[in-house]
Length: 220
View 1 (cartoon, one colour):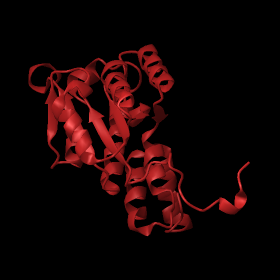
View 2 (view 1 turned 180 degrees about the horizontal axis):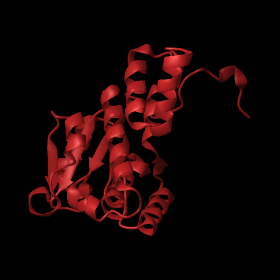
View 3 (view 1 turned 90 degrees about the vertical axis):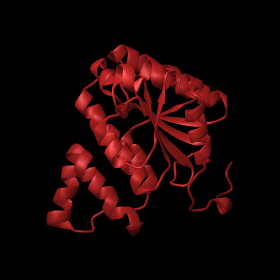
């Protein structure tokens, strides 16, 4: 049993915080989107940009990577690159980003053990680095709505595989709000609600309504 006298008001070690995680974007490129059939591609793009802005708001380290950008897959999604314009984009030949030395070194340079990962396609370019990172002692959180597979079945089976291996499925809004956690954190409150208004769909419209008619400082 837990001794309630030892319970404190503090985040648990499993929570994502701005100081303990890095966000990895793998292969959000035109050719990969062309083959994505697991869900609405516009929604995946929206979630990807929302996740990128979440990382920017909280100054979380980001790694951007592409595969065969000049010969097959095309450039990284411009909306994603625009959120982090000063970040080097690591182009690879490997489908498994974890087999690319530059990619792994970029991840190691963040100093973070919790990796928030999104990419195309889920069954290849997400699963492979996830399994590899888990094997090397990292904790991996896969952003399923900012990822997509060639079919609903491919995406679903990929998520099942990584969960069985120990990865955690999350969504981009979940990551954003977990990083914020307390609406009294005024230094990021405005930026977080702006991201939600831009990319949060009906939730974002709800914040617009609340801020307009109810309380300009209403919590999310």
